[in-house]
Image (cartoon, rainbow, N blue to C red):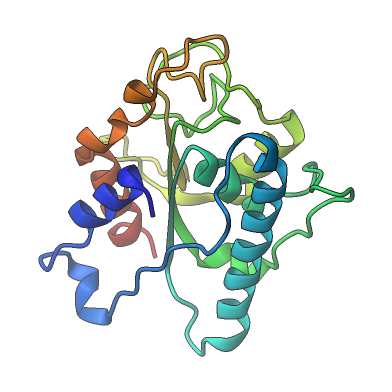
Length: 215
């Protein structure tokens, strides 16, 4: 699961959370999560595994579950590529399939940290993320547009006092300054890249908001 996502799960899955009374299941995605020479193969394996899992739940669960996805670094890239596959070429050639409408509708919240495909200026970037730059494998515009259009809910953002509802992104992405993965050109410093685990209050509040304030 990794340190960052593991810490998120530890702070997010509390007995006091209102959704726990309905049952909650935590699953780590089974894929290589390898670096260097096997990176492209690992991404493809992860995307295929996640898409298969979401489609299985969509087709086998009498009541579709509310799904929260969380990923750090390569895991972040896997999640967002699985959700918006149309312009993403998989290892060995060809494009990933698009998730069914039912599978997409199950996704209630997505939290990613240190995403190599990060790009400044996206509506789902956290307010405290760096405001410029892009990741070492910056995501293409077609994929960004798809994520923006497909993964959103109608309602009010956290803390909004505006009486008028609006589209609220289901995705929250965090990128710290000098994180080499989401800030191409930064020195490789895994201390910064892994430091998200010390800041879980905002992602926790975001997921709570998306799980309880939207139907």
